[in-house]
Image (cartoon, rainbow over all chains, first blue to last red; front, top):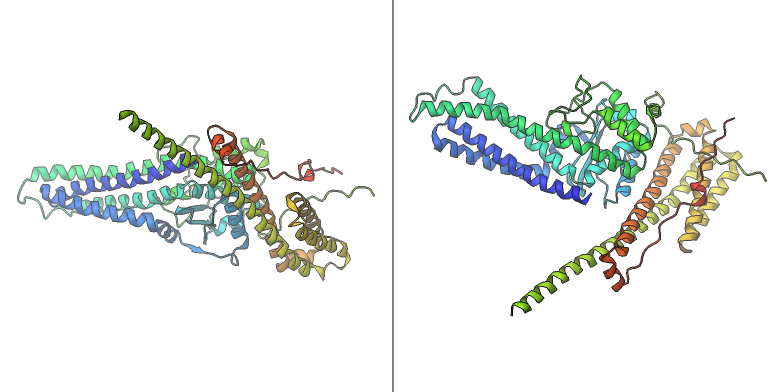
Length: 337
Length: 186
């Protein structure tokens, strides 16, 4: 686990450096193409570089707030959602973290959850209303334990930064592509220095603008797939109950609704793919944010030493009242007097 | 001259390594102590919740006075046992857990109670507290494991011996909990 924390810290720095470099290059190419010449290139390189650094710092310190705002999450207290809050506290104790993360609810029927923040002291867990309604206490515990593991091993810092920075690259590239397609370059043509060099740089800029987000996305996806398996396993280490999470994932997988507030930049944060691709594949493609959910369920069932028949839907999924009491405890028969 | 420098460098490096081992031993030991006090916090919270629960259900359960008396008595015993050492405390707390289990089993038979919002929320709070107690114990045992490993394994065991770090006891599950529950298939 400490190895994982170190790796996440290092990866966060590398990511910020990578994004700054990528944007600076993109800035140079766009600058050279639009403004023309090396001066324009260097000018925009500087501008993009500074913006990228500022945005990285902003993402580090308040990326969690941005992600929560984009997701339409609002903070709740113990009095609003006692059960959710209690489960979060239970998992905080199991993980041995000093203080529980802030708890947020997203008012949407699609069941899903994510965690964000920069370290365990500045972290938040958000779940959708649909998740709370669908899952029973044990399953909810499994999901919260999974998120708590992301918090404990600093996945949240890296994943939040990825969301913020990848989002920015996509935004810049997208903006440039639209700008160029709608004829933003006509005016500058035939100017001072060299039309040819400008045209070449324009092509380079276009290619970069198309490739940059793709590269960023594939980094994001490859990294987040492995993290999900890891968080499943270390979540089970907290609850010691693989079946709770397995049943939760199978309930979530059975739900067809996509999450309206999720987008491509935040999709990898969620416990299960919120965008709900129609195809269900056995192998993960380059652009999948999540490993195949059936494979995750299979691994969890193996941990519990049970077959798929153990995946009976939870009480709530079976249409029972949502605020169910804990299962009746087994009373040992009184010994004969 | 060179020999002196080499010796000094070796001493400094050794000193840094020793300080690192010593600090991590202290950190582990504090984690164990902190984990233990977390258990106490949750036990205390359970003691505080029980009078509210008894108050909320007693009007409905006039025929179940015995169950309620048991819970109240077990709570008093558990509070008393708090300063009689971990062994006695664990035993009294387990009695309390058992009495609460039978109280909740009885609650199942009263539809009025099961629908009562106050009882429901108290039940949720007690369930959460029970869970927190067992997760706190789990974390305590995990901390003891890493701490004990550290003071028994080379090279940190050398430092542990010099500075008198002693291994800690695991929290053991009570006898009853370890039995496989009997299933009555009538």
